[in-house]
Length: 502
Image (cartoon, rainbow, N blue to C red; front, side):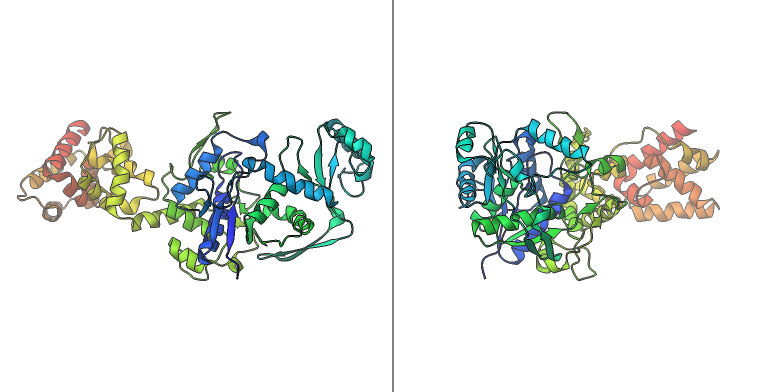
C-alpha cells in the first residue's frame, strides 16, 4: 500500500476559519493514524484577495493548536516550494501540455465582451455560461484561425479547460459514495489567468500530483469543483487521489454556513486567534484570547460531524488518532454549539495541573498590576478551578482573594444586612482572632457554634460574612476563603465592611 499523504491548503485571504481548522484536524488525524504525512501548502494564486499577515496568522494558529505538519511552508520538504506563488514556472509547462493535447484553449474575450454576452442572455431570460454550446461563438483559439491566434498572443488572454461533451463524470467519495454528473452541465473553467498565474483548479491538481497526495479531504463547498478536477486528472493521464468532502459547520440555529457575522452577533469566536484586518482595522475575537485551551477546541471540533464510535466525549489527541475513521464522518452538516465548546473547555481546565494553570493566571494578575507568589496562585486555582469555563474567568472568580473589596453588592446589602449585623460580625471577628494556631476548620466550627448558640439565621449571618470578605454573594466555600486570606486579612476585611456598611 502506498504511503498516505494528505494536505491542508488554505488561502491567505484572511484569518483561518474554525471550519478550516476542523478540515486540517481531520487531515492530520487521518495521516497520523495511517503513519502517513500531513502537508501545509499555501494556495495564494488569487493575488487580488491576498491579505498581509494572513499566512503568518495561519501558521501561528496551528502552532497554538498543536497540529504539527510533516512538510510545508516554514518547514520545507522534498517537494518544496509549498507556496503556489513560488511555483509559477512549474504550472506553465502543464498548461502548455493541456493546450497541445487539446484539453485546453486560449480565450481572448475581454471583460466588456463577456459582460455584453451576459446581458444579451439576460434579455432573453437565460443565464450565460462559457461552455460547449457557446465556446465557438466566442473569441478563442477554437473559433479563430491559427494566424489570428498568433496575432493575439501579445494581448491579455486566459486559458480555459475544454470540457468534453456527453460524458458522465463519476466521483468516488469516501463520505458520500458515488457522485455522478453530466459534463454537458459544466462550463469551461479558466485554468490560467491573464496575470500569468494559474487558478486554484490547475494549481491544486498539479501540486497534489507532484506532491504525491493520496487523499484529498476537504470541505463540501469543493464538491461542485470535483468533476472538473477528475477530468483534469484524466487529461493529464494521472491517477486521481481519493476524495472525501466534509459536511459543513452550520450556524447554531442550523440555517446556513457558520460565518464571522454569526460569531459577532452571538458573541463567540469563529477564528482560532484574535485577528485585526490590516486594511480595514476590523477586529475579530479568537479562541486563544477568549480563554480556551487548544486541546479543548480540537476535541470539540473533532466531534462536530464525526462519531468516534464510543460514548466517551473527552478524547486526547492520541485517542482521536486511534479512533478516527472517515467512514464515521457524517454526510449531514453539523450545527455549531458554543455552549458545548464551553463545556469541553471547562472539562479540560479541570484536568489541567494547578501549577500549569497558575503560570497562565500569573500573567493575568501581572497585567492587573497584582504581584503574587506562584504557590499562592496555585492555592487560588485549587479554590476556584471548578467554577472556570474559560481561562479568562479566573480574574472575575478570584480577584477578591488578592484584593480587598472596594464595593459591596447593593442587592445583598439590602436583603441580608440587618441592624444587628455589625454586632454579630464583631463577635465573629473576635472568635477568628482568638483561634491560635489559626485553622479554618476550627474557625468554621467556632462560628457555627456562635450562630447556633444565639439562635441566629445561619444564611443571613454567613451571607454577610461572605459579603465582608468577598464584596458579593459569590465564591467557593466560605471558610476556604477564610483559610486562604488568613486570620489578619479576614479580620481586617470584616472591620472594613462594618465601618463602611453600618
